[in-house]
Image (cartoon, rainbow, N blue to C red; front, side, top):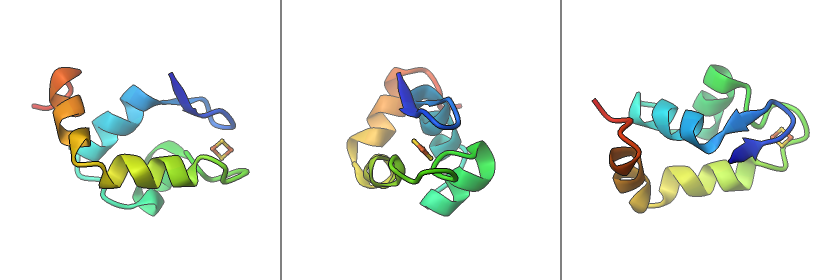
Length: 65
Ligand code: FES
């Protein structure tokens, strides 16, 4: 599923980047470009960073190392 339509960034890419250590929207913007155009996805990205379940989701998706 796309999280950022402007930059065609998927939820899986965002979760992988978070598991790699990104912990701010700015870090996600720098790594993926997400949120760097219209900004409509920034709240969603912020939510992904804050949701305690994000870690579990990363594990479930097999993205953690
Ligand atoms: S939807 Fe992410 S910058 Fe526009």
